[in-house]
Image (cartoon, rainbow, N blue to C red; front, side, top):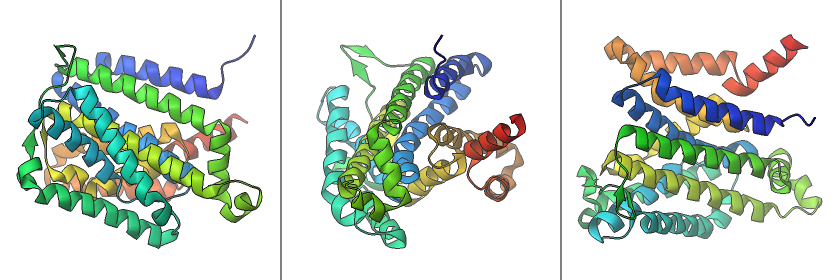
Length: 313
């Protein structure tokens, strides 16, 4: 009898958790928080491919999130496009922008790469803030509901289910990509790019590919967020949002798909529970993050997995 692989087992556990969460945490507020967790997790799974596996930092990924969100908002609300078509247009625009800037940006390394991606995100945020007629400027703009064939996606449970299925699909894609020759090439780029190039790996092509893929995934999540929230502001494409995404990936554990999901869940849901501490909410959140990085330096999931394996052995 063939045993299930860790990839299939992990997907099965994730699916079971996503099914059981609404039962364990009923209520509109809890479902809204879980939906926001799922949207952030989708971005982080894609970003983890870039940061965790390819070793390329991006401090401007919220820009692609914002492009997807505003593409859906503008095309659906102002131009009357079908939401699915507007979502695809946002993904295509994000992919084209990522492809156009990937080669010059990804030729950089270290803090130069970080500054370049940061600049890209800032440019997108500024454009969204300044184009008042299109985006509503800093005050934001409303977003029409998501409809397919005349049926409107409404209600917290329907939105949660949609985001949960999307997260499962993106996770499945990521796990399969990591276990493929492409994933091995990305790990080679991360581990020793020069050695990989000597062995015949087209490192530039793989870095561009994963940058574009992660941008498209972020754009998709942005489109979901726009219709779910019903209102958009340029803050969703801002610097702090980008830092939040990167922190989620690092906290959960780089080069760990499920770690990215755990990091997104913690940093999205934890502030909701810390609100009871009022003015000390951000202090406690910072303390939790510092303690995690000190005692679990590889991130939550990889460090705990290693310790469990040692104790089991």
